[in-house]
Structure formats: structure tokens, C-alpha cells
Image (cartoon, rainbow, N blue to C red; front, side, top):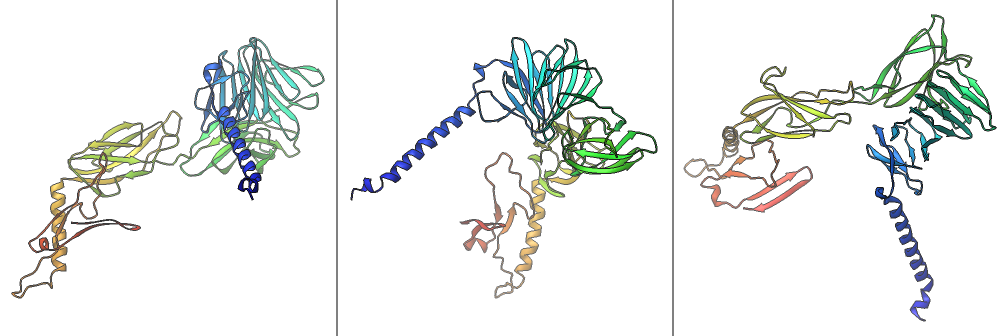
Length: 464
């Protein structure tokens, strides 16, 4: 039988699979390849803490953005549960996206139109513009305006908050109503229902950021109310409160609770669920002290060389201040060096030192201080001398029973000189290490091997 005819089906399937794979790879490359030069940017996007994503109108794949990435007409922008984004148009209009939100930008002949697909967006503008969500349309006046719309996917309702300026609402059936400055309304089925805010929230303030050293923070909630107030404190991961992560019956005007890292929304609600407070947002971002790496605690470093300092990066730090002092309270001979990376090498004279690292940031309240470590810098000759004495004592102890016929001690082991026992070798700028030892008259006659051992066993062996 002809070999081709026997496997013709398998060969056909294989060729077809390769063609499909090639076409898929081409489409994936085409989706990912973006030529900004062929498009005119209409603004830019910035984000907080975690990156946002942008999708072009003629693409299917979402792309992570970098700070100040350009935004183009018909672009879609979305955020995840731990990211917030701000889109700024060239006209000055700003769109602030909450976590888990998505918008689409439409510009035509100078008119600005924003479509809210999911979540919540706050808009600041100095001229008229339109916002569409579902079948509802909001239009701002030709004046300074600040307003927010929050979409509730589970109930198909919307909440509109007008902080500055008036808004015109056009419903699905063409009904037109005016939302005045300072009003909050719930948009139902072609109707507007005013929301009356009952209590004044005090703390945490809106958009507050808390930076605990550990993974969670204790939050104090305070509000203005009479002494007989009984209601509920509600905490959610989204502004529309369609799913709660915490609910507690409260009395009086304050309470305290602990929460882990995340973005949260809180409000008060009456027991009969007819009265509400405003909604506020706060964010918990752990900010542990910098973890020091090198030098190790109470180590001795070789003098006459640059001394290296290393530490782990801090998520919130803009830069670091390395502090080195000859006193543990950092008042004597203090050196302060500003660093924008996590390592530096500097010369130090012989002596005993203490060191720590401070962080600084553009975010208020995020500075931190590491632990304090001590180390010594010694001259290499004194280090070798002290180590040689130590080795000599060890060798003498090991050879105490080895004597010749005349009763003289026989030295057969060479003295290890460098690196010293328990010492640390700074390999900054080096790609090799030198080993030194000293033979006696008897050890020269023997054959020796140089062996290096690590946690996993032998690392290197060489005949000398």
C-alpha cells in the first residue's frame, strides 16, 4: 500500500492545523501591534496602584496601559477590583473610574459623549457633554459641572449625584427632568426618585488612604447623629452595595472594625432601609518597613574596599534615604544618602557602624523606617592576623598527638588565610574570588584538593 494513501487523512489534518495556528498567531500579532502614529490622541490615562486596561475600537484584546498613555476616540477603558483610573481629555474634561468600571469614549465634531458600561464614573467638565448608560442620557450645561453616575447591574437602576451644576435627564421613553445641583436621585423605570441623605459622615473621609505596617488596619467609623440612633453600617466592594462584605447593627455615633488590604465603600442605613447616608470610599494599602538584605547583622566587612548596602524594594516608596552612624541613636557622625534604587556602594573607614533605611513618597503618610543593623569594618591585615591565630590554635589542637620519633610535633595541615572563617565577601563588581592559604614545610609535600560546599553538597573541586 502507498504510504501517502495510508496516512493521507492524518497529513491533511496536520496541514490544516498548521494553517489554523498560523492564522491565529497572525491575528494575535495584529491585535497586539499598535501604531500610535496613525491615530490622533484625544487625551491620556493615568491610574493608581494597579494598572488599568484600554481597548481600541477595532481590536478585541485588552491591553495594560502605562502612566500617561494616549487615549484615542472610540477607545474603551476598564479597571479591575484594585485599580482606579483617570482619563483626561485635551478639552480638560476628566473621567474618574472606580474599581470594576468600564467606559467608552465618543468624540464627534467637538461634542463629547461618554458611555458607561459598568461600575461608576465621576465627571468633571467646564462645558456641555453627554453621558449614556443603558437607555438613559444625562446632559450637563455649558458651565462647570461635577457629577457621578453609578450603575447597578443587578437591579438595572442608576444613582446620579450632582455635586456642581445642573443636569438634564432624558429617559428611555423620552421623558425629560432636571437634576439640580446638590441633588442625589435614583433612576428607575423612566422615573427619578430623590434620595434624602440623613446623616453626616465624619471619618474616614471620602477617598481616604490608610497605610498600616501589617496586612490589615483597624478603621474608626464616625458620624453625626443623635444619641438614640439605631441603624446599620454597611461595607461593600462596590458603590452600589449590591453585595455586602460586612454589615453591623450600630448605636450611637462611632464604631471600629478591622479590614485587610482593599478598596471599600461604606454608608449608614436605617433599620427599615428607608433612610441613607452618603457613600464614602476608603483604601487600605499595607506599607511594611523596608526589609534590609546586606550587610547582615553584626557582620565584619573587609576594609579598603567599597561597602555595599542592599534592601528590598517598597511598593509605595518614591526613593530611599540610607542612614549610617557610629551610634545606635544615629546622632554621632551621621551620613544620609538619598537613593532611588535598592542598592549602593560607598567607601567607609575602619570602625563600627549602625545603618537603617527610610522611605519617602509622594503619598502623604507612607514614609517608613527599617530595623537598625550593626556591622564593623576592619583592615584586611588585622582580619587575616586574627583568623590566622584562630586557625593556628585549631591546627595545634588537631595535631597535638602527632609527633616524630624525637617527640617533635609534626604540622601537616596548611593554614587557611582568606576568606576568613565566618566572613562575608563583597562580590560587587567582581566575577571571581581569591582563596589564600599558607603551607608549612610538611604540608608542601602532600597533595591537596580545593573543595567548595553549599547547602546541596559539593559545588566545586580542583586538584592543587
